[in-house]
Length: 409
Image (cartoon, rainbow, N blue to C red; front, side, top):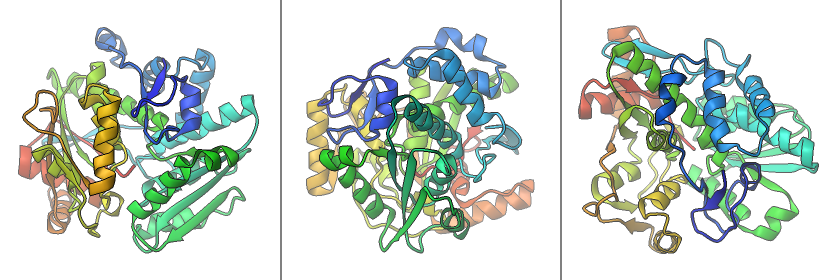
C-alpha cells in the first residue's frame, strides 16, 4: 500500500514513512492511494478476537511491516492494557453502545494511541534517531498520547492544551506525568489555537526536519487506521446479534477523525448503512452536511469540551475523496478556507455532500438531559460527549442500531 498527500505534492510513500511524516510535507494530510475492498472477507472475519481482526485490517494498510512484527505490535497494544475488552458492544434500551473507554486513560483515543506509540518505537529501533512529538489537545489526545509514549526511548512529547478548557480529570492525567520525556504546555486560547501552532510548526519543513517532528493527532494516518478496526468489530457483532444486514452509527464528532474511520470502513465494505454525525454547539460539521457550507463560527464552551472545535483537521481527507482526489481543486478549496474562513460545495452535485451522512447538533440542555435520561431509564452512566450522540439519536433518527463514543482529533 502506497500513501499520497491530499494536496498532491508529495511523492508516494510507504506506511512507516507515513507514520513518521505525520502531517504531509506539502501541508496536506496523508491518505492511502487506494481503499481495499474486503466485502468477500466479512464472513471469515465474523467471530474473530479483537486482536485477530485488528491484524486482518491493519495488514492491508501496513504492507511494509512484516506480518510477525505487526502481530506483535498489535498484541502489545491490546493484549493487557484494556480492561473488559478493547471495544465491547453493550445493549442499552433499544440501542447498542460501542464502549471505547476501557483503555488506560478511559479515553477512546487509547485504542489508536497505544498502537501508535508502539509503531513509533518500532521505527526508531530500526532506523535510529529521535522523535519529537508535537500534539494539540482539548483533552482526550493529550492524556492518551502521554500514556502511549511515556518512558519510551528516543521519544519526547510536547502536549499543548487550552488552559482551563479541558476536563479536570484529563488535565490531571496530562500534568501529573513525571517521566522525563513528557512535556505539557497550557496555552491561553482555544484548541483551534493549539492546533494552529502545531500545524504551523509542522508546515515549516526546515524546522520539522531539524527537530524530527512527529504527530500523534489524527493528522497521522495510523490513528485513523487503528480506529477503522472497531467499526468492523462493532458492525459485525451487531449484525450477528440482531440478524439485520447492516447497522447505523451515531458518532459524537469534533475533529472528524473518529467518524472518518467509519467512512473508510464503509468504503471497505463494512455492513454500515449510515453515519449520523452529532456535534455540540460547535456545529460547523453539522452545518456543512446540511448545507454544503463549511464556515468558521465562534468557539462555544460546552459540557463536552473535547468537541469544542471549529476547524476539523480530518475534514480535508474527506474533501479529498469527495472531489475525486483532484488535488488542484482540493488546494483551491483549502486556500478559500484559509483566506475567507469558509468553503462551499454544492450539496446538489452528485457525490459531494453524500447521503451516507446525517448530522445535527446538541445543545448544553440537550446534553444534560440525555445524561439524566440514560441514568434514570437504564441505570447507565454516559459522559457528555456520548450524550451528544444520544441526544441526536433521539431527536433526529429515533432508535438506531449502533452508537459510538466521543470524538476530538
